[in-house]
Picture 1 (cartoon, rainbow, N blue to C red):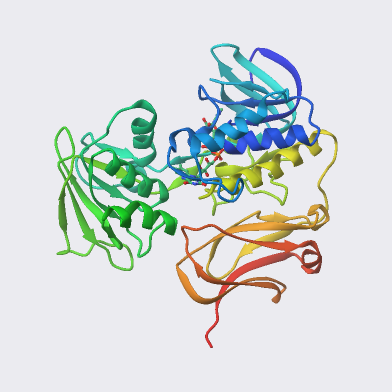
Picture 2 (tube, rainbow, N blue to C red; picture 1 turned 180 degrees about the vertical axis):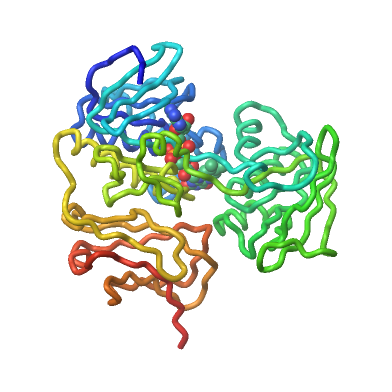
Amino acid sequence: MSCAVNSGMYDVIVIGGGPAGLAAALAAREAGAQRVLILERDGELGGILNQCIHNGFGLHYFKEELTGPEYAGRFIARLAGTGIEVRLNTMVLDITRDRQVCAVSRQYGCQMLQSRAIVLAMGCRERTRGAIGIPGTRPAGIFTAGTAQRYVNMEGYMVGRRVLILGSGDIGLIMARRMTLEGAKVLACIEVMPYSGGLNRNIVQCLQDFDIPLYLSHTIVDIRGERRVEKAVVARVDEHRRPIPGTEIGFDCDTILLSVGLIPENELTRTAGIPLDGRTKGAYVYENMETRAPGIFACGNVVHVHDLVDYVTAESQRAGAAAARFAAGARAEGPALTVENGAGVSYTVPQAIRPAAAGKGVDIFFRVRAVYSGDLRIVAESGGAPLAAFRREHLAPGEMEHITLPKALLDKAAGSITMRIEEVHS
Ligand SMILES: Cc1cc2nc3c(=O)[nH]c(=O)nc-3n(C[C@H](O)[C@H](O)[C@H](O)COP(=O)(O)OP(=O)(O)OC[C@H]3O[C@@H](n4cnc5c(N)ncnc54)[C@H](O)[C@@H]3O)c2cc1C
């Protein structure tokens, strides 16, 4: 790297000033890190929460319903008097495995920073039309739902009047309601899977309460329009997600919002050679959120896409405290158990656990592959023998799940732990 400014040695540098970065920086400071720095490319702290003006944040952490800016604001207020340094409008371009950070800003120019530990908290980004290859012309009026949310909620632009939403992830559902409240007609939400990708509470509060139809097992097969979108053609799909000829429905619309998935913002992680998990598309992490590069930790949506910010906060506090301990010379060591996907589980975080470093136990977060209901068990097993089973009545891919494995059970495991879903038939 060939950057110029050198600011001395930091204990912990946090990349990203969203809820993950804020919680990690505060926890690092509380755990004794002296020099903590947050680098944020935007002009303000808060990350994606700044554009989420709806409520529903903080139910677990604060036991209150807050808006996104209110939730972020509480953490930003806690920075005062901590001595945590913040550089805004600062884009991190590169990191190395020996914990150098290259960043650039108008105020400081090109900065080469050295830290004892780094926390990656860069969030995620949305999949676009190009990522899913929708056929048709290329007119104006097609936005990702998050971009539309920023235009409407932060920049004050109304993006359209007759709107079709493709994908039923949470951002799409929230924007269906938002566009309706702003006076647009939301014609439908179209979902290729036989179930919604969003939280059940958002289906009820954002679609059903506003009589917006949800077409499951449907997709857009054609977009028409010269300068601006004029029509979208939607068709039913079969079990292989192939459109079924003869089932087409035309929607006269001027706007299409895409809510077709989020991907961890992992360019810095990848270019530093930090191993990624193909299932989450984020870094592979241990129980304390350390990546496979010693001293580099990761938390929040850059690790895996969360649906609730409260879990982002808890995970990031773990990462920040562990980064502070690393900076002070402590090392999390010991043989690692890998955590594997069994039947019905699509990913787990963490992907590996070092029982010797696990404290009282470890929270394992995961998503399931399909919608399950009835008498269900989440089973954690090792060497073919069950370690623990947790009862549930409903599991869905749109709702992140978690279990806690106490240290005593981790000590009984050998080599790996497999997580699987079992349907109990009486
Ligand atoms: C539309 C939407 C609605 C949601 N609704 C809810 C809800 O109702 N309730 C709820 O609990 N949760 C909700 N969530 C989830 C929650 O908001 C997210 O899980 C949480 O904000 C993720 O936090 P983060 O810090 O990981 O990422 P972000 O908030 O995305 O923050 C990442 C930060 O990193 C910065 N950054 C990235 N790359 C760099 C770089 N190279 N250099 C410097 N800075 C960089 C970005 O600018 C950004 O500020 C919602 C999320 C979205 C997107």
